[in-house]
Image (cartoon, rainbow, N blue to C red; front, side):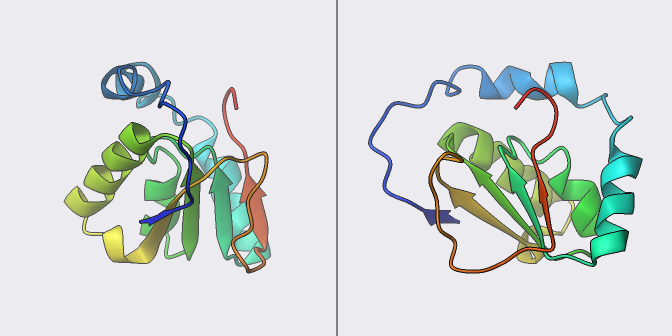
Length: 116
């Protein structure tokens, strides 16, 4: 995981462990993003990737994926989910703020899902 220097506190530190209780069952949008991914071919950037709710099915479908989030706690949960699924090598996680970042590369598709 690459970490852009961000000194501010993590507002999701406490919330991260409960995030999936609310959102893990929400999968109605996954086919939409998989269809977008198939049309563009990737690579895919998910802004505000949280705990990896979309990163996991995108990686399972074989897409090169990068997840960007400002919360170390959310990224740690995403990393654990990806590792448990054997997909950690296929997804790059980056700590950074979606309002100002430079990953030094281009993406075929950028996603900003749910309430982000």
